[in-house]
Each structure stands twice: as C-alpha cells, then as structure tokens.
Length: 437
Image (cartoon, rainbow, N blue to C red):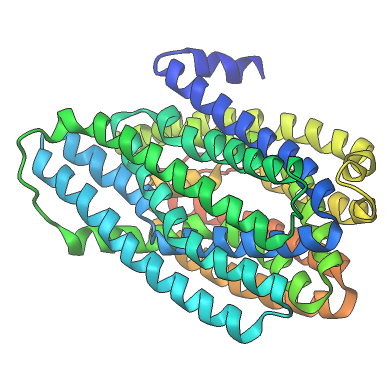
C-alpha cells in the first residue's frame, strides 16, 4: 500500500490522489447512507427501490454509448493536436447524441415498467427511474469531458460525492417530516439529486473547457467518434451488467424482500472491489503512454505493480467482510443479515477478479477494445443464462454463485487475451516473459 500511495504522490499525483480519495470515499459514503435509508424504508420497499436504481445505472451506462471513455480519448487527442474545433465538436455532439439515446432508452424503460411491474410501488419507482436514465448518461459524458483537462477529481466529485449527499439529505428530510419513505419517494429524491449533480458538473466542465475552445468553430468526425465509442460501451457496461443482472433476476423471480437482502449483501461485498477500481483509474494514463511508446517490458512491470496494489488490499478487505459481514448486514435493519452467505460468495468473486489486477484497463488502453468487447459480450450472455438457471434452481444463493463464477471466468479470459495480444501475463506471481506485441 505504501508503494501505491507513493505512486499517487508523484508527478501527476495531486489530482490522482484526490481522484482516488473521491472515488473511494464517495463509495464508502454511498454505502453508509444506504444503511440508514434501508433502515427507514424496510426490507420490501428497499428491495423495490434497489431494483429501480439498478435498472437506472445499467441502462444509463448503456445509453451513454461509450462516450464517457471515448470523449476522454478523442478529446485528449484533439487537445494535444491543437484541434480546438474538433474538441468543441466532440463536446457538442457527444452530449446531444447521448441525450437522444438516453431519452429513447428512458421511453422504452417506461413502457416496459407499465407492462411488467409487479405492483404500483415498483411500477412508479421504475417510471421515475426512466426519467433518471438520460440524466445519468449525461453525467457520465461530462465526466469524460472533464478528464480531457486532466482533472479526474473534478470529473468524479459530482457523481461520487454530491449526488449521494443530496440523495441522503432529501430522504432524511422526508423522514424528519414523518413522510412515508417508499420506493417511489426514494426514487423521486434520487431524480432530484441526479438533476442537481448534472447541473453542477455541466457548469464546472463548461468553465474548464472554455479556454481550450475559445473562438473555435466546431468540426465534426461523427463516424470516427461513434466507431471508436461503440466497442467501449460493451467494456464499460460489462462489470455493471454483471453487478446488476443478479439483483434484477432476484427481484424478477423472487420477492421484494429477497431483492432487498440481496442488494444489501451485494453492495457490502462490493466494498472489496473499490481498491481495484481506484488502482485502475490511476493506472489508466500510464498504461496508455507506455503502450503508445511500445515499451512492453515497462508496461509489464507497471501492470505487475498494479496487481500487487490491487490484490493484497482487496484480500484484506475481503477477510474483514467475511469476519464482520453478518454484523454489517444487520445494520441495514431486520432481515438483512440473512444475506450473509450471499456476501461471502460474492466477496470470493471480487478477490479472484483482483488477482489479475486492472487487466481490463490494460486491454482498453492498448487498443484491444474490439476484441475485449466481443469477449465481454459473450461473457455477459453466458453469465446471464447461468444466473437465470441458478436463480430459478437455488434462489438468491444461485444468483450469487453465478455472479462469482462469471467474474472468475471472464477474468481468466481477459488474462488469456492479454497474453495472446500483448505478450503479458496479468496474474499475480506469473514470470515475466514479454514478447514483442
């Protein structure tokens, strides 16, 4: 860990360190506030709310069509080349395209909710969630544009800090006013929090980009931008899809109480994934630079350091969750502690995933996004089928087993892809045997 924080403190370390603190602290903040909200809502209503929010996060990520990452890539290239017109065109086009996609996906989601929702509470929560989808997607695109200035901390602050704080504050206000907090009310609070964070982030990004595009006329490369972003949406959406499909299927095939307990266990287990998430964000620029210079041996060394920084803290967090998991789940309220076996199974999957370090980021930054997109698409389809089968057969425990198995299988596949395409073994303890990529 000392090496990791030393890395954060060097060179571009100020922004990287602040970015790490925001992402890690914001995730912890979200987890803590969800404990209080679950206690106020109860198991069934929290289950209906979590189902709606998982749909928002999944469809909102898909609706941004990969532009959250592609805007950083193309915008940074335009900035480096002095193409202020291309940067302005990218900023305008990405937001408009994603707004249109978000609205279309939101309408489809609303129609789906009207046709399939089990009850009025779940239906109304899903309908409000449909309104959240285009706003969620816009926040993601603005995050990518903010990174063009190299200000990762500015990119992450509205979504990771402002949104959960506003959401918790609004729900707490309802509770203090003795207003019933059901899934519909909670989603209405989330809609307001999302809208406010979007406005704040848009103002910040506009001011930060203004000096780069002053007096520029927009130029367009829509075909190139779209072609470069579509493979990325699969890569961006896969991990969220894996983290969502089990919650969705447990809610669809079981009861709201099952969904609430499962969501609490899944979010508790996800604490073990935050270190890898942060290490990947810090490593992204280094991987891209080393690959661009074809310094494969140095890239291998950087990856190995990232694996060490990912695995050992993740293992320590995972062991703590296994020891204290039942007590943590009991904080959510009566009935939530029943999800401890689910937590234990999911923690094992996160530890296995961390053993390969940020291999997904390595593949994205080294131009392997097309092959990675195919791999992740196949993995998502197989994982969904497995989760459906095991959830029907074993209930929530089956969903957890399928999710961890999918994480393990996909991690192995990405390791093999990195070896085949880059000549690098992305696994802890593997010998350094680099070949020319």
